[in-house]
Amino acid sequence: MHPGRQTGGDAAFKSARHEVNEMALQSTVSTSAGRILVVDDDKRARDFIVSSLRADGHEVDASSNSFEALRMLGRSWYDLIVSELRMPELDGPSLYSEVTRRWPSPPPVLFTSGLGNTSAYDGFLEVIRAPLLTKPFRSGSLRRIIKRLLE
Image (cartoon, rainbow, N blue to C red; front, side, top):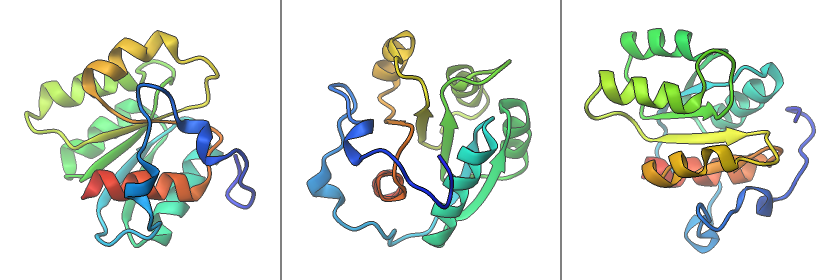
């Protein structure tokens, strides 16, 4: 995934457990900007997500790892967290657990993944009912899900 080149289709992120209602997400432009924290160890993916969200007027901070993200969350409140599912040291589910342990009313989380098979995370995603956006994805898909999560 590269900011200048979008690959994949909107259908790439759909699964039986996390299907997004496309009819409810017609507009790609967010009507309410939010403060969003992006956590991804892949710089290209992180930059792509950040630039897509800033284009909609969101205030976006980014982190390359979960430990830094936790420090950022300790200094500032975010309306939403966008986190890679699989990262070294502290993965997305571990980050989520730590956030919910530290803050009783945590912001919603959108998970992303470049894994072809996310079955190891299926139980976790089902329990917390968080959406999963599978890489590669288009900016429009990301923006529609963010809009829905911020409403």
